[in-house]
Length: 415
Image (cartoon, rainbow, N blue to C red; front, side, top):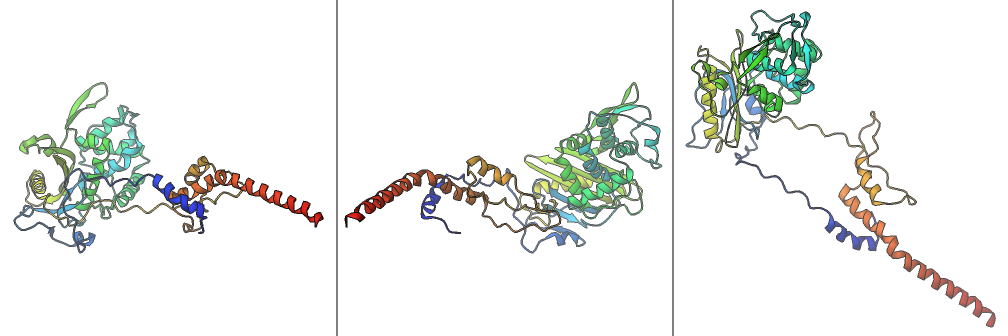
């Protein structure tokens, strides 16, 4: 591109007026060293325990869970894992994915009167909160029934409001894929034992981390007790996550943020939990401890949390639970430059980048042929200012040329 000498001289001054690039935001807490180039997502797909700690730092505790994962919720760094991608029945921890899928489209203050057909299909032996037909509930009540009592009856009603059981299952799988959780197969949105329904410690950690970023999810997940409507009266319900309530002699974990526990015959005990100490938040998932105790899932999660908070400042990550990079949006071609007769006003220049012409859907995106916006704006400034400075010189030159021509014509007959 050829730039006039006047524009080229003015260009540096214009560029000096452009705003400086924003400085990167500094992390609020010391972050563990980044993994070496050899450590990638494939490592967590290998069987066994994976952890990277320097000499003198203890490794994770010996636990009986078939699969577990410890991750930093802020950075997404996986600090330790065992068989992270083993596909296992998730039980009611799958309700975390259900909430991620259905919560955003449902107002907590909306009221709904439950009909008989909405409660059909609840599996035998399901955990229930006590949803009754012909009773009007706020959706917030039903969501508390999901998180606190793990009520499959509440899930049935909320899934119906989300478009139906099958549609909700498909949306849950799509949501899992969008978060990078590729091990999960949803057959029953409430987590009820169903052939082919699986998840993994990795995927459950992804769901837990994503849930903490949703204010409604985080509030329900951290609620220890609430009142549930019974039709003209109410009764108390209490969260079945013992790390949150401290019930049954388990002991409440300091800084616990709750999330979701589960149990079925095929899955055994499963748990997604999170806790915050200072500025660090950890997410821990535990699937199917094999020691046989009813509350061993909480003991093993507690020991993994304790280890994680102690080791996090020195441990190097062995993977990440961050969502995959989203594909770049298709960029439309820049609008054509204004014609010579078009006014080059600053307002027009400011609006041009925000209203690009959209290419046809069938055609591939055209390569960017125009310079980046800051450069284009800088180049346009001299072209706008130039006529105001050159116009007087042009008029003077024209007048001198006319005078010279007239003088020459008058002198000609005298010769």
